[in-house]
Image (cartoon, rainbow, N blue to C red; front, side):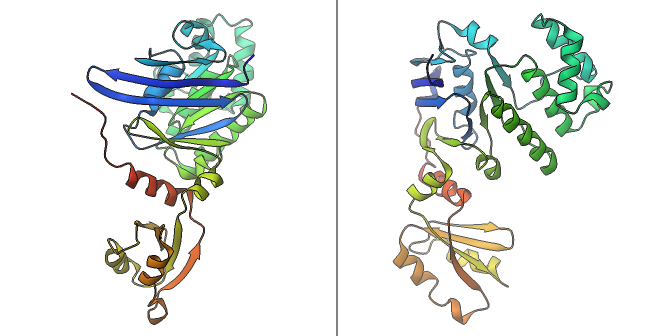
Length: 309
C-alpha cells in the first residue's frame, strides 16, 4: 500500500479553451490534515473533484487511496467523503431523516444503531428531530460532516466547509476534524481562513491553476524571505496610504488596530520607517504571519495568464 493517500502528477483540466488547473502535483501522506488555499478561481475545487473521481483530468495521472483517478473512480468514491461548500442535503428532512437516508444509500448494516452513534459523536442527538432548514449555518455544517463521515471514509475532502460560520462553530468543527485524523482519517480541506490553515500539518497554495508553494507553515513563511514591521498608534489609517507604493514596501495590510508593512528589502524598509521616533506611531519588527506571506504570494501571482475563451 502506498504511503500517500493522494499521489497525483501533472493534473490539467480544461473546459473548452479555458484552463482551470495547470500542472498540479500533490503527494499527501495518509493520516494527515492538509490545507488547500488560494484565491477564488484558483482551481482548488476542480482539483479536489479530479482527485476524488468526479472529474476526469484533461492531462495528468495519479492515485487516490491507491486507486487510479481515471480508471478506478468508483472505488475512490466509495472510500471518500466529499463535503461541498454549499449545504447539499435535504432541508425538508430532519437531521435523523437525513442521516438515515444516507445510510440507506450505502446499505449500512444496523442502520438505526449506526445513526444513533453518529448523532451522539457529532453532538446532534438533542437536535435530531429538527428540520435541516431550521438549522444555523454551523449546525448545517455539522450535519453535513456527520453524513459524509458516518461510513468512516479513509479520505475526507472538505471544500470551504466553514465559510460563513461563526467563530465558535468553526472551532468546534476543527476539533472534530482533528479527532477524525487522530482516528486515522486523512483530511484535505480548502479554506480562506489563515487560522484554519495554521491548524494543518501542511498547506498547498494554488494561484491561477498552479501550485505556488506547499509545505509546513513555518517553512513557507521562512522561504518567503519577507520582512514585516508592525505599526500601532493614532493615525495609522492615514499612514497606510502614504506607505503604499514606497520603494521597498511590497504590501501594507491592517491587522486589527495595527498595520503590517512588509517587503523583502530590509534597507529600503528601514528607510521608509526611519522617522518613526518623530511620530506617535510605535514601530516594531515582527515575524511575518501566514497572512502576510499569502498577501505577498497573491501580489506576485496576480496576473492570470491561463488561456481562456
